[in-house]
Length: 156
Image (cartoon, rainbow, N blue to C red; front, top):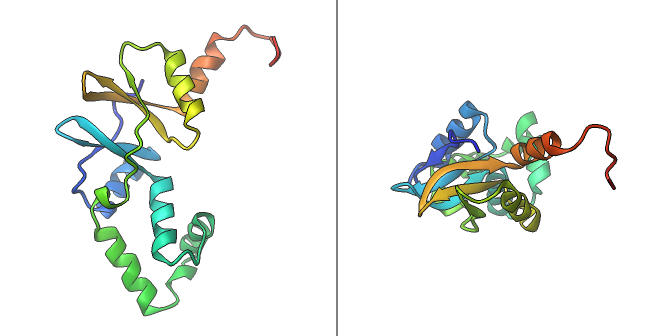
């Protein structure tokens, strides 16, 4: 479990929240109020919200490439939409569908939750009702890899 998961207040602007995620090297973070998880904000939510704001004109993937190449800024109206979007609070686009496990749950339970919720960016780990950390798919896969016997095939 990673205890250093970014924790974001729901009133934080999207600009500030994404800056924190990028700075810390996370694709998603836990949105919480007073330590209690409320949702998740990550790359998927940002790209989906941007696509929706632009009238579905761009898919999330097209937006990623368009912004990288600065092609999405062909008009003043698009530039204004872009700037106003980043001033909105995290709560406006975060997902409220949390994948949660208790801190004393076996790692296999977290792996099952990720499998059952394929769109989840992370599993929020809680003690009582408070966030204590998170698990990303990469951490679960590392555990799976370390538990396997060397040389065994996939069907072994």
